[in-house]
Length: 168
Image (cartoon, rainbow, N blue to C red; front, side):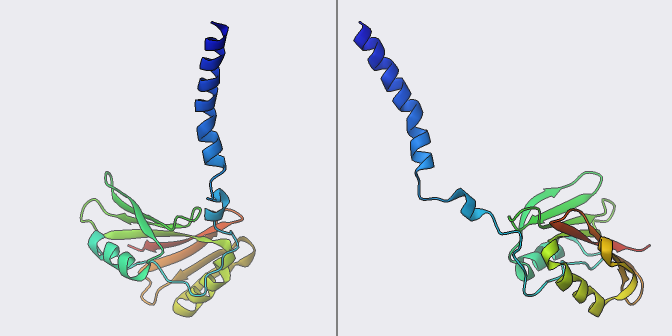
């Protein structure tokens, strides 16, 4: 009787331990998928930012020009939003569209801080610098006809935002 009891307990323990052994002894390195936070881009591509554009135009641009991003969410309510992520940390782009006419009015691009020099240099070459505070990574730019404001802001030691906003 005692032997059957011990045998049952031994079988139960083996069944519970098997997934742990097979999971922890696999060839997959769970840390291998975590991107090095110091990964630097060679070229920065601006997110789609033509204010007044529709959802389909943004989706088309993202599919063709920003292949390292994938769409992870599409929401609607008070406004329509598209969320794209790289799958590497918090790097991504959030597009906001008006609920009234479906037109793009805001873009928030979250980039790695290691790429800030590349991004800021690009913005300085393509837009008019309005103000700059290099210590806090706060820059303000505008386009030629002043219909859009582009701002940057440090959000953590690892990331900063590039915000594109329509000026009414």
